[in-house]
Length: 253
Image (cartoon, rainbow, N blue to C red):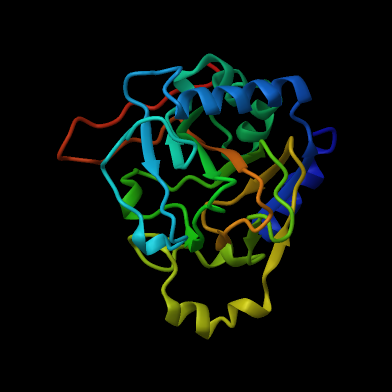
């Protein structure tokens, strides 16, 4: 973070950047413990979003809309972690404010803050090539900054992030966003351009929302948890119609 210009230059050019190991060990241990407490129901908050993982490892087999299904360390996703004071402290860390303000040149809110978990016993599920945006997100403008913090090591073969550098420059592949269709992957010869991003616990990555990225199952036998926070312009509005529009948390007032 001492050379923000170089970090942002790499991020703008390649769709990702490394910040290095910046999460202090004691804080990291606290977040790991809190993640387990939330999964096991020892700490609860009204309105948290949960998604249970599947034992098949297939993204296509995931269920939706079930919420918390009882104590388990096999939740794939826990969202709205800004409700928890330990996670909120890292989400609101002053280190990230100048970074986010440089990207958006305005005040900041967050679209989501969540843990992606690949459980030790199952290895988690594979996350296919995708983009984080589009009509599915229901926003008035596209976010473009995600801060991804490793709470555990994510080595090669251990569920690390993989990315196609520069793919964010093409914009959204489909208006809906989400999973990149196979015909686009084939026409772009995607597998020839993949860059793996192994990290150690406490390391932070920046990922552009439109960059094509994925993660495989973990084969290490160890848990792989990562906290990802999508920062966006505070001017961004929720466009959903079926329910009341969402109000977004502002990390720095």
